[in-house]
Image (cartoon, rainbow over the protein chains, first blue to last red):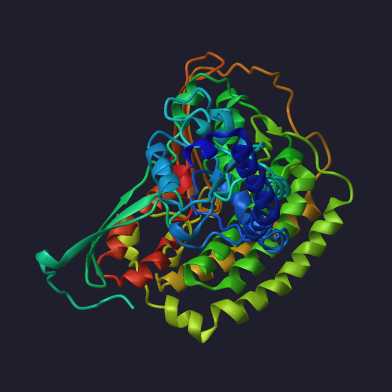
Length: 173
Length: 370
């Protein structure tokens, strides 16, 4: 038995079967999971700064984020899978932001909205502002602007959905 | 309803709850609550999550560079918050702003007041769990954003009112469109009153909740809608008219109830008054230049000035100290919501926890505490 396991033919066969199984079973499951996830994004309600106004507008009736499959931010943290960082993150908020990200259940995605969340923006030389949130949490989509228009946020959302659609792992990352 | 009887809480049973900064409806600040069962024993607001050091930043930027970052603390009301800054710098430099520029700044300030109050209505709806209210308010708000966008060139941050006047003239043909929108919104407000304000269910949740008496409102130093809802007739546009506000005919809505409902009523009435001002401003606006040519780095003579205006949330003030260099020596910002926040511990005490979110309604703009 030991001899057989070590033989190249057996390993080749196992690899082949794995490959076939992944294509035949894994791919449809992945596709289904990704498809389910990308149209039911639920954002966390964390208003870090002034970009929240444009998130409010995007969730409002003219732009209506819901038609793209992202709900309004009313849910509990444990149900949420999208963290939109709406603008400036200060030193006081940074530990809370990390805590909130850690508390969210996987799979989870992050959109960094506005110049402040990306690089510190207008407040790059302020003593109390973080220069970009990607120092503390991983970011999937950057939406530039100060603040970005509601349409820009929707575009960011669509880009994130494209990313989720192509996700290769069942964990969604 | 708020509890009216005095009761002594049992120290062993008190639970400590943190409302925010991540909470649907808290905005960017936190309230520490001490609860006895369902009742709030003590409340302590914890602001500072958006402290961005604006005042320090202002000291190493010149007077024109300061414009964009000073409008961001209250981004909804970006022209209302910039108004006193521009007035202050003008006063220090002795600028005489052309009348068309003054009219345009009033127009933008009033448009921003409506935009801000509509957002307030929407957020009020969120706190109440009233989805119709947020969708209506957010949708109708866009009509005024459209007009403001035609004038200022952006959706929320215009950097429009600058020292020496306004940045640019308004486009041709905007007047007719703006007047049409004002007429449409006049009718729309009546629907708002019917569906939200005088709805028995809505009244049941907001009447007699968080009553702030006239004396307390004055003692705790509130401003704006909160102060006027408590029966104090105070509006800086009337009391010390700045810019061209003395040319317009409008009223100051005052309610004697002092409760949550009255604060909403005052906001809705104020929007009606803003429409009145807008109509008069668009018809009376004179021709001419809109700003003085100051150059990119204006020199401001040494001196200090304190200016205050009525922004959407209340009294907005700046204290500018200049030492003759192109940069301010010190700039102190006085924001209305920070003044109003002092009321929260007072109002939340003895209140039902379910109503506490309700009381946050006048605090939703916590971003200005930077």
